[in-house]
Length: 381
Picture (spheres, rainbow, N blue to C red):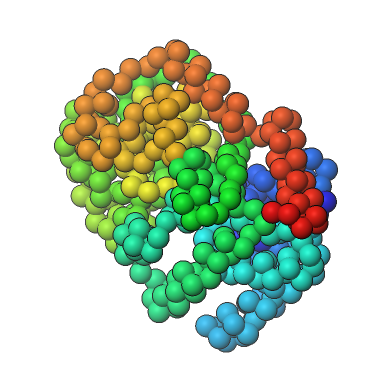
C-alpha cells in the first residue's frame, strides 16, 4: 500500500520538530514505513528530493517559491501542492492540522480513487466557530492574508471532515464531539518514540516544569498569575515568548525569585528538566493531546493542569491533577505533590501500552490503514 501525506514534515523526519502536529505526521510515516508500506511526503520546505533512513520518500516542490509574493500563493503554491499530491497516485492520502489546503489532498484522492483520511490535531478542530474565536483566532492576528486563509479554512475544513473516508481523533472527548455532528471517527492515540528518557539517580524533585509555546493562546498569562500567587513554589520555564502578550509577561516574570527562565532547550535537555522535576504544569485552556504530557508520563512525572484534560485521561488514569480552571485549587494540589514510586510505574505503563511506537503499535497502525484502504475500494465507509 502507498500512503501519501504533505506539509512541513521533512525537518521532523530528521529529528528537528517544528510542532506537535508535524511530529505526529512524521511518526505515523515511520510506523507505516516500518510496516513495509511505501510512504511519500510532499514537503513544502525541502530543497531537494531525498529518502530518509526509514525509507520514507520526501519530494520537494520545484518552483514552489517562484512568482510574485501573495499572488504566487494562488498561481504557484496551490497548483504545485495539488500536482505533487496527484502525481503520487497513492492508495491513502493522510492529512493532519486544521488547514483548508487539505482539499488539495482530497481532490487528489478522488482523482486517483485513493482513500482520504483526516486526523484532528486539536479539540478546536471538532469545535464550533465561537470556541475557535475565543481560544484561537482572537488570541492572535496575522494580517489580511492570515484572515483570508482563516476564512477559507473555516469555509472548507468542516466539509473535508464530513466527507473523509475516515476521521481519526486523539481522545474520547473529540470522538464524542464528532458523534454529535453525526460523523464516525476512530480514536488514534498519539505516537511516541521511547528514546532520550533520562535516568537520574538522585532527582531533585524541588521544582515544577512549564514547557512549550509561550503565548496567549497557550495560557502563558495564566502561568504568570500562578507564579505570582505561589511565591513559595519553584518553577522552571522552558521555551521562548512568541507573541506580544508573552513578551510582556516574560519580562515581568524575570523579577520573580521563584521562576527560572531556561529559554529554548534541546529535546534531550528538556526531557532531563522534566524527569528531574516534581511535576509538569500546564495552564493551556485548550489543546488536542499534548506530546509533552506523554513525555512527562514516560519519565514517570505527573501532569498538573489548570484546565485541560484530554478526553478526561488525567483523571481517569490517575496521571496527575486537574484544577478545573482554578489557580487557587491548582496551587493547593501542587503544595501536596510528592514523588510516588507507584505513580511512576503506572504512568510509564500507560505510555508503553498506549503510545510507544513498538512492534505491536506498528502492526495496529498498519492494520488500521489497510482496513481504511480496503473499505474505500469496496465502497463502504
